[in-house]
Length: 335
Image (cartoon, rainbow, N blue to C red):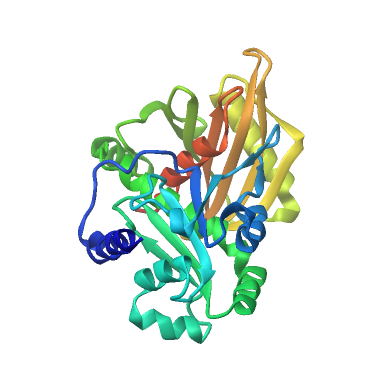
């Protein structure tokens, strides 16, 4: 146990100064949950439904993370999972409390006691490329309240960190020539790694598609003249816009109007309307999940659409969408 605390403290002290070209082994869809009592304890029971919540990919429900448990007394010195969540009362008399105290530092102890720092994210801890999320409070009652009131924040904290780390890894091998070419020709920027290639581009209708396979991942950008921002109350216009586009550009793809959803969100620093749904192609006997982010450029009176599409029969969709979204979040218009 003492060696583990020394390793964690040393890693936390130097992690900000080190980077790795390759992330630690394992998947961004794996998560290690560390508590005092392990899988059968109260904190694991409260967090499992939150961290293990499933996401709707139209044809399937998928958990974002495969969760494994370990007691704090059994935590390995350097866990090989990319995502670690440590939950427990900040009590030096417990294994989990000792680990938490070694990670948060003296300055945060008082903030935790005052209820100002109950969820702490530690990037590059315990090793570069890993993230440790600490959920803590000075008492068990206070910790229950933290989980009850703020627990829903936890999956997105882990997910956004996973996308950021994945993005750094993908863009460690950038295709700067293609990125600059798209900016010059079309007026938008999206950072492209060498893993992706230009699949198609056209001015009729205007748009660009980047491809990575197998399995198939398509990252597209298309645009249309529009003076007004998109409205969720006029969503049929957006459906018709994408429907016409993919019919022309994706070899007669179609969309299922009965399996489409619209949500306001923040995307790449912009307010955006997200459309998610199911695409299919009768000619190719194929189908899959897509999501499109519509962003209005008021200066240019343009509606931009950043399009994410997968085709991976029998395979999980979430890791593919995570990868597409990690790159799509580099989108900027008017650059």
